[in-house]
Amino acid sequence: MKAPPFAYARARSLAEVFDLLARHGDSAKLLAGGQSLLATLNMRLSSPELLIDISRLGDLSGIQIRDGVVRIGALTTHAEIERSPEIRKRLPLLAQAAPHIAHPAIRNVGTIGGSLALADPAAEWPACCVALDAHFVIARKSGTRRVAARDFFKGLYATALRPTEVLTHVEIRVPGPEYRSAFVELAQRRGDYAIVGLAAQAKRARGILSDVRLAYLGVGTGPLLARKAMAAIEGKAASPDVIAAASKTLAQDLDPGPDLYSSAATKLQLARVLTGRALAALAQ
Image 1 (tube, rainbow, N blue to C red):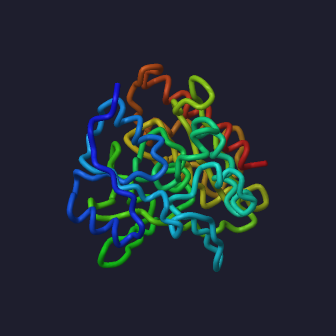
Image 2 (cartoon, rainbow, N blue to C red):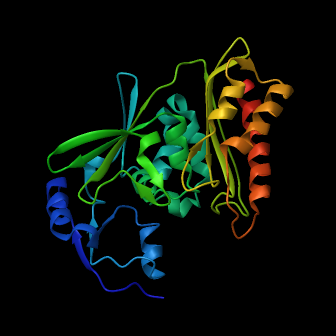
């Protein structure tokens, strides 16, 4: 299939983006890496009247570390995050998750901001940002605002972004040296969307896990924190009994729907398997 007809504008500044969004509203779509948008256009799942190309806005790219906070521009590609020694050192969860995103050709072009704004429930970055308690910088004509990742995702492909706003940066405080992270997922084939995935982080001191965060993908309409499972682990060593108890509580945290490949019961069981793997990794 071919994309429906649309107009195209390459923005030279955020001010120009805001003017175009104000004039065209919901009939306009932002084009960053385009790895999801172009596919939906070709399948006629979306039909904007105008594409606003923001890919040349250099201020929205790159990785910076300042005052213990990692700041990632929305136009930073998956591959740049994957290859970054600073990310590997300070935010290993992102480095662990990046290779699971599609294939190298897509990671070379797709952007973290595009992935977050799309809010696909099976995508890796939303779950990672929730697990890391990230904050998103959102710009509009009148200024900026910050939204916590846990409040940003509102449902299936729905976010807190308003039609005249642009996600510009992701900000994540660097965890302390006692923190451990693990990213695990299961897919039909390498590079496919996850059937179930888990972004996990915890502080480990003298064998005890605290500040535990378990953010699941592929089991709902967006990234989900398993709060009861987290509480079952908090302040304990990751013994087989504790891991089993946490896995058992997942039925209270997760209510996955079936997909083309797996029943709801299968997804829940896979989530339990991944929970055991992730907790074992955090305990090492």
